[in-house]
Image (cartoon, rainbow, N blue to C red; front, top):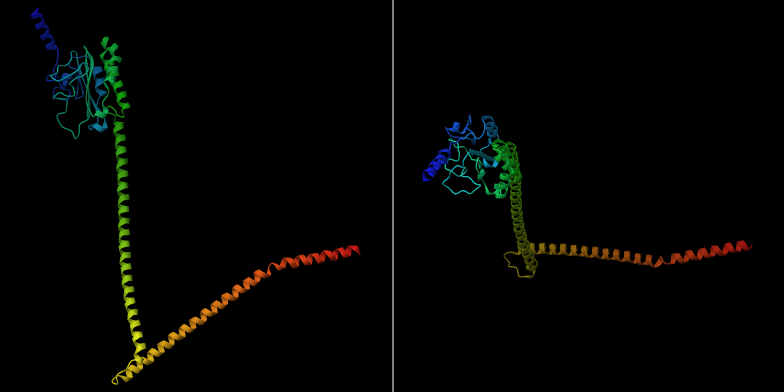
Length: 338
């Protein structure tokens, strides 16, 4: 009995794979996967025909390198579940987390998000993903995908089961505003990024214009403050000149009343004459202004008086009109009587 169990284990071991010896469709031994060129599908146990395998190879084919342009789909087929030393559940696989991960030999600028599918003749579909949390699907979604293909798996129709599974998975991803290697989506993303870049450039341009206008306003305000300072300075200088001129006039007016030394009789007499002339001019100007003010007052008084008289006379006009009308009516009556 023990020998039989050991023999069965050896048979299972010889027919099963581990992630250390499972061939990579991206490595130099890609032909072991049953494909004619490097791809993202491996079928070393021959669960599909060559023609069916070529159809599946074209479905998850990725033309994009970056995660924002799509999700890279990788498919591993094996009759028995591929053994892993890591932690797995009934419906998960280590296809996305093993040491090899089917990465190309030459590194690219950026790596796509990866979604893995493992299909076994015993156990059905298992999944894995190495993507951003925003793009993760719920476990209920994977359960529905597995149940929808149970009848194909029971009939060993692995091609239709795998094809429909990939199509339904694409539909779920499209509902999350994502795609499986959709080139149109990458173009739309590029267009959106260009629009965002264009709007950012316009915003920067507007901000620079606003900054320039603010600088011009600051410059104008500083110039205005400078002009105000200069005007204040000129006003202070004019005040000083006027105050000095007033002091000189006061001194000139008081000079004739003071005793003038005999050494400067001519200059003192000249200053006295000038002060007298200035005083006369000021007096004449004041007299002229007083006369003008009186004339204006008289004019205003006469105007007000005429307005008052007009207002007093206006109520009489209706009375005269009424009397004339009455006289006309009486004359008309007399004529009618005659």
